[in-house]
Amino acid sequence: MPLNRRKFLKKSAVTGAGVALAGAAAAPSAQAAEAAVVKAGRKAKRYSLTVMGTTDLHGHVFNWDYFKDAEYKDAAGNAQGLARISTLVSKLRKERGRCNTLLIDAGDTIQGTPLTYYYAKVDPITAEGGPVHPMAQAMNAIGYDAVALGNHEFNYGIETLRKFEEQCDFPLLGANALDAKTLKPAFPPYFMKKFHVPGAPPVKVAVLGLTNPGIAIWDKAYVQGKLTFPGLEEQAAKWVPKLRSMGADVVVVSAHSGSSGTSSYGDQLPYVENSAGLVAQQVPGIDAILVGHAHVEIPELKVTNEKSGKTVVLSEPLAYAERLSLFDFELVFEKGRWSVESVAASVLNSNAVADDPKITKLLKDEHDVVVAYVNQVVGTATETLTTVEARYKDAPIIDLITRVQEDVVRAALVGTEYASLPVIAQASPFSRTSEIPAGDVTIRDLSGLYVFDNTLVAKLMTGAQLRAYLEYSAEYFVQTAAGAAVDPAKLTNAGNRPDYNYDYVSGLTYDIDIAQAAGSRIKNLSYNGAALDDAQRFVLAVNNYRANGGGAFPHVASAQELWAESTEIRTRIAEWATEKGVLDPKEFASVDWKLTRDGVPVFA
Image (cartoon, rainbow, N blue to C red; front, side, top):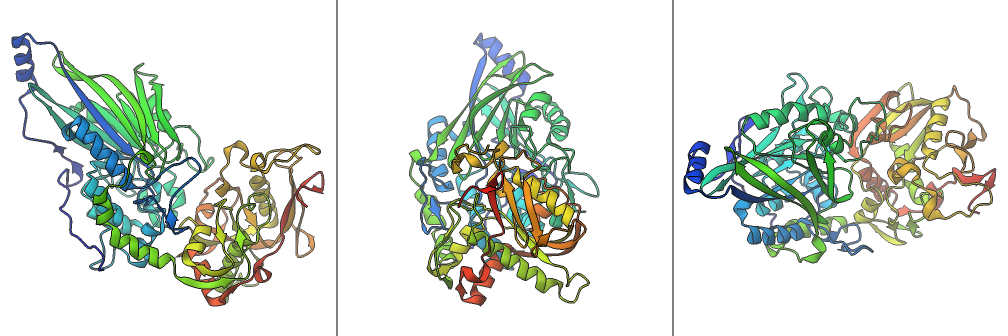
């Protein structure tokens, strides 16, 4: 069947560089409405409003795992996909009245599954006469009102993002996504909508969209010199008073930023990465914040604003359309204006409902095309390779990644002054469940190994810098005294460091002594059989996230860049496997590192 290439009506809520008021026909003036209420001797008018929110959808339209070619399921019984969210939203609109609800999202929409990759790279939406993005189709059909920009919106470049924006019937908001030259908003900062109340002035609801300053690091190749991303607190402090002065009775922030007040990029930026809680605490005039980016479930978090003393309610609906946040507002009209009397937040679980057949039918063609694409056989494997133990043992499946990166960078540097330098590579155990089975190897097998759309960069590093890099990486392990029991489930993620911020480095050999304090764990570090020379120069093949400072690894962001490309590492792995035809660990596997305690191997 041909792909769905429907044309959509242009959004009507956005005009020019700003955002217009959206709603029904004009209501009576505030003065006239209040006079009518007083004359009739009635009690103060009240109004109930529900704001629904999703975040970090990451391309999940259906409850389908493209990497396993099966319906998604996990031990917790979660379900995924916008088709489930559509069912929840329809139910709530029916219960509470569509005219009394608002649907928003906090970003990271167009990256994360083979479905979104396919329509960014294989059959791109930017091509002449190209398809309408599946996420635009689904979110238009569900009826989203506004969506904040996430950092992953920029992964495929600004052209793809702008085309997606054009295809959406709702605005993409980013009050702190500024044009680098003019410092004016490059996207609509806010969305405002009127909700009409019989016999009273309309309730005006403003949604302020804020995105993550880390975009300047993580997608530097696309945004440097074009866009700049100041802090969320600073821009909220600028825009919230403006929205109030424009008559907003309710201000909701949709923030692609976690609530913890932490950052993964150290001191590389003066802005906090996960600052939604700080925005609530420091900027008066906000009623509620839809939180994103952190992929955690927060049904309701109440934060007291330090300046106003008022309570701000936060909620984060996990990720991948597994939850839907609800903000239930109760408003009262007194003394000529609407005010928020109370806000309560909660989350609904999408596993409680079935897929909306409207969404299933709408995107069946696109889904089927991508399923066929990821099931293409590109080679064979001589044995099963898995990431199950990869976070604490040197696993051949990760060596495959580093080998591919080394080969690509060596070929790229041929004929340059750096061609004679040793090339080593970095890789992380992204997944704990990836597997390349013995026998036929498909694109989905390889995509499941490398789940991010990272690209490859070559950096010039010294032995001393690599030693510091490895020490920092080794902080991932929990300090464990000699003689103490070792539980692999409790050995890693010290300080809540995620798996993707633990790196292997190929080409060097070393021990990680987990009995030692962080900063003194790397032992027997050598290259080519000899102790590492701190002055020796190496070329580090590294993904763009790490190269640009992601994870705050020392030295790599400031190191000289020798080469970079826009082809995804995932694609390079597929090309390498296709060319070889056979994946045999004898060709790429090596034991470069091991865990020890006081010099004794932890895992024999």
